[in-house]
Each structure stands twice: as C-alpha cells, then as structure tokens.
Amino acid sequence: QVQLVESGGGLVQPGGSLRLSCAASGNIFSIYAMGWYHQAPGKQRELVATITSGGTTNYADSVKGRFTISRDNAKNTVYLQMNSLKPEDTAVYYCNAELRTRSSAPARNYWGQGTQVTVSS
Image 1 (cartoon, one colour):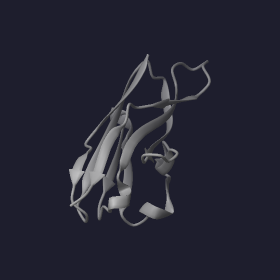
Image 2 (tube, one colour):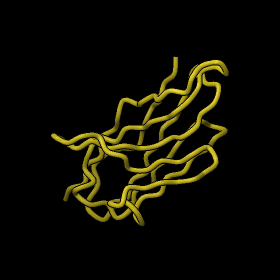
Image 3 (cartoon, one colour):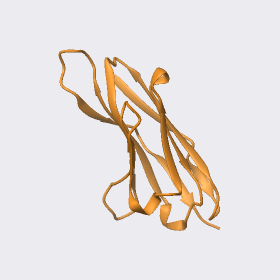
Image 4 (cartoon, rainbow, N blue to C red):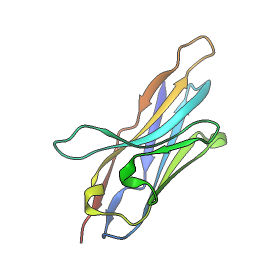
C-alpha cells in the first residue's frame, strides 16, 4: 500500500503565504515525478506544478513567479511554497506521485486526499 499525506492548507488573506507538504509512504521502490494539482468548486482538476526526480520543474502560467515546488528525495516528500496568494487560488490542492512499488511493476500515479486552501479577507 502507498499513502500520500498532505498538510499545510488553511485560510490566508490575499497577499499571504502558505507552504504545503506531501509525504509518500508505504511500499515504494522508486518515485519519479511528483506534483500538485488543484480543483476549485465546479471546475476540473488542474495542474499547478510538477518536479522530476532530477529537479526539473514545470508550472502553470497562473502561478509562475508566485509558487515554488521542491522535493526531498530522501524523505519522499514534495513541497509547494505559495506566495502572493490570490482569491482565485482558492481550491482543494492534491498531491500526486508517479512511482513504482517494486522493480518489476509499472509506474503508476497515486493521489493524496487533498487539502483545502482558502484565500479570503
């Protein structure tokens, strides 16, 4: 079994900051890309940022310059530093990891349970 557990969400005023964390645990052989997605009410889940095992990052245009994704491979943990938050950033944020549970298994995607981020005055 593999678990992805997110933390760090909450309520913040516009212009404020939050840091999300996501730790992967369980039967993990290797982790490839990790990332963050968000889903606002009535909308589809969208990519926020991804990072490969080698550290290559990719961001949605809407968060470039404001959000920073990073990871600690030794801890199987990915982070999302969110600065200059806007009301339109309000959503449930989900952690994603592409990983293998053993060397002979194909890589597949796993998701966390989500953490709510609300940006409001």
